[in-house]
Amino acid sequence: MSGMARAEVNAAVGLGKTLWWVPFAMLAASTALVAWRRVAGGLHTPPHWPLALLASLCLWGMAGAIRWCVGRGLGWGLQGPRWLLPAAVSALVVLAGASLTLEGSPPGTVAALWIPLVMGETWAWTRRMGNRRSDERVGPDGGEVIQRLTRLRLPGGKDVIEGMLHCPLAPGQRTGSVHVAFCPPFAGIPKVTAEQISGPPARVRLGVVLPHGARVDVRLAAKPNMAPQLVVLRFAAAG
Image 1 (cartoon, rainbow, N blue to C red):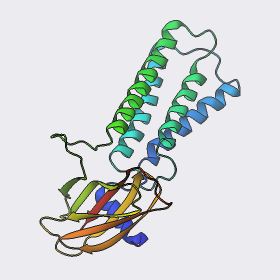
Image 2 (cartoon, rainbow, N blue to C red):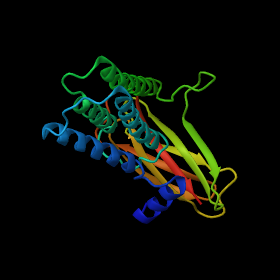
Image 3 (cartoon, rainbow, N blue to C red):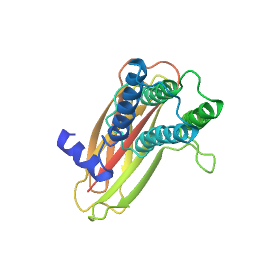
């Protein structure tokens, strides 16, 4: 799939794969400014509790916006381990909170600053761990989920299908394929992307793409071990 086709699909699915950079840049800049002022001695007087609460809510809001963007699929193109961005967000939040916690701060100020931050981070990581454990593998009837897709019609009339694909591999199996049906079919050949989001390192490529369906091929990067493997893909088609 060409870079131009991938960009078209990402633009059709949402506001673009880099939308998460907006709140992340705001959070990073705010944290850097507060930390620099603390190190430079520019912060002397502890803030009153209403101001501390406002700062805490602003930090919580920026962190929540980043996680919302990534959760909605607007963080496509992220490289590296899946935990890296959430860990970076939490580190920035904690650093900003520590920089605002001055010596001699009243207990009310400390509580107003840290209670929302601790509650927000605890909720975010607890929810993340719960989602990771479930891994969307079990359906309402107890069966194993292979595909979870949503079809929507954008205001401009473009059809978009997006969601998750699971490619289970038996012990010793190195290659596999996932077939996706488009019903009703697209008017023409859609632009399709498939990106791995979890599982053992694998090469993902598009096989056949037609108006009524597509095939995604998966090949493990290394020789498989004698245990079942699961490659999870993020899939999108627009036409």
